[in-house]
Length: 280
Ligand code: NAD
Image 1: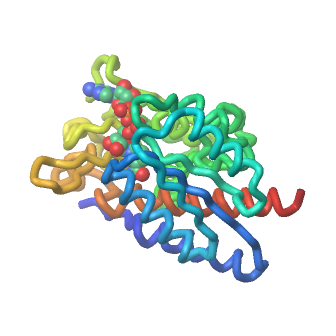
Image 2: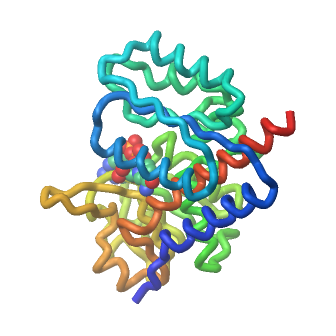
């Protein structure tokens, strides 16, 4: 039976470190969060980010814009935030309403304030391993892997999913720690066979209960990034927890695994951004 990795505890420890450093060194840090429209899930995420800021001693500035906001209006706000000395990090909550071009919005954020690490400049820096900001969700997964004491070096690592925000940067971080990395996606043949090779298996697919026990090697570390809402309103991950936890050595639950880690990394990135900007 697998040990359950407690994402809440690991993330709480990271937020405490951020809070303590801010208090000890009297650092002024601010995060602007922009939300457009009325998506209920986005609202929950934004509220959680605000709460984490309060805990850490980071000033948060919220900009809630109406659904019908134009590109021009949103870009104008980003320009204002780029120039605002009280704002060290800018986060635009995705997804955006259809009329807005997400890529153009992200590219308008100053790379120095791009605490989500979505800007092309920061993505490139992650690729070459010379980065200031960690990509929030994959970095959170790495912290959870570290918390198990399992060394990534030389391990077979399989990531299911190749999105720009999770799968690809996750593969890169595992590679930076000398894992032997395979990235699987919707066109992968013999997926179960590839997954069974994994000492460390990361699922970022967005399909409930997608990873079943027959896809998992005995003793593997299983990290479940998926957040799926079932018809009964309950949240579940991409991994069939009951059966996979019988085989894995360590496993993350959903909720309470990767989810809280994303916000903890965001707090870390905002502190890093503040330190860099305050030194300029
Ligand atoms: P996405 O839809 O952009 O990517 C999904 C990936 O899964 C794609 O690369 C696709 O090729 C792959 N895929 C789809 N069907 C497949 C199949 N049959 N076999 C193999 N691969 C397949 O999603 P995303 O943004 O990367 O998010 C993935 C999941 O992680 C979602 O459930 C999302 O809600 C969750 N998520 C969680 C956090 C968090 O903080 N915990 C953050 C971001 C995303």
